[in-house]
Image (cartoon, rainbow, N blue to C red; front, side, top):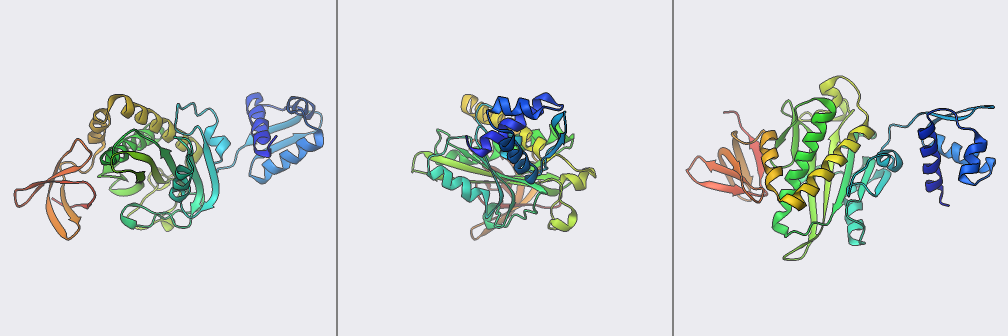
Length: 324
């Protein structure tokens, strides 16, 4: 039996009992020696689990580490697709790169790759994503929608909806979406979404959706235009609980997209939008235009009524909010 699987069984037994479990009972249930059990307990403690051992009483789990460990994130997650397989790293260059390689290798849809930190985290348009260790949620999801490449923007937007909904439910805050992929709180960037795909001309082979969320980072950890949940609420938040809520929300909205199309997510996106109705500047290729963001197109593009009278659709350019 692999060490990871055995340790997950130990943790599940300790969590279910919620009190002391004798070493004799654990050894019997796991079909291993007391010495083998002790070795696993030491390895779990090294991972940050607080496990108390009392003679004649047994073992008791009284604290879990503030880490996005696969077992902790998956424990009672109860999703249909997203997060059925979770891979955790202490550090990676980018969860996007790891998930993309898994996609090429045929990994199952819904696989989640998360990390405590990223050395080369990235955002949209080649920007860096600052990833202070243990202070945020950095993860990527592998999806295999039966869609054309032209529909990729829709999935980015529905992921923004899922993220806002989860944050609102868990924190009571009122996050907003700046088209297409920034989540704002009090006009500062709280989270970002990046989508990359592997596709043929007419169909998507797979998508990787990456999300970076600033959770317990202080101002010194972040660029001036960013914020975190801890800064906004003045208290720390459980990253495990938040990630579970986000994965459940993503699972719901992705299933809804496959069943009912994009319109339900689009209507919800408009409720969360901080861009619609705003005066904006669009920088795309060699053109810069200003105007008002008036609507979302059926494929997820932003419709802008320009000052020169044109109405244009923006799919990939950079949009800035301007003062009215």
